[in-house]
Image (cartoon, rainbow, N blue to C red):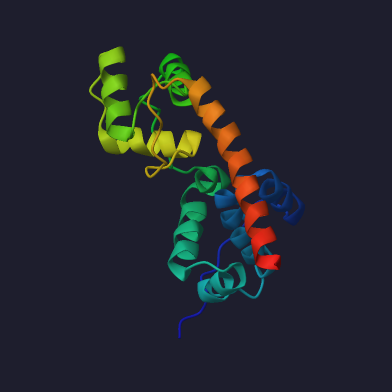
Amino acid sequence: MSAPKAFKINQSESELKKLMKNSHPMIAKRVQALLIFKRNEDSGISKRLVADEIGVNHNSVQTWRTLYIEGGIKLLMLHSKTGYKPSKITDEQELALKEQLNNPLNGMAGFIELLDWFNKRFKTDLNYKTFHGFVVRKYKAKVKVARKSHIKKDVQPVEAFKKNFSRSAKTLSVKKLKTTKK
């Protein structure tokens, strides 16, 4: 087995701790590895032991060590992760979509109808998968929902039916109780 690679770390332990505390979690692991190397600067420590202590792969520790040796702390602190792509749905479109989803009289039965409405209204050609992902992520919508009642349904007869039905159901249950007790 070869000896651990020796290199000089210019920052103090307190500086490294401060950097680790104020860094993004992805960068903090790098600084934590550097801190372990700093504590074992005199005797040296293998990349595998550092990786085990932090809980990362030894190849990551080797990459971080190489970055520090070649470019110092500035190169170690850089990362090329860009994050999520910007949304294809603008704020104005999002507001209209929210209103449409919350409208009980919209009459739409699923995401395909909603996507058609969206593409026609805003003259876009948005992909179904993109649209579906956005609606589910943003509004917690589900594909399978109970069937909506008809848009033009008259509410008053329904309420009258419910009122009469509940009354008749109660009298039926009372009559059944009286007949079973005899």
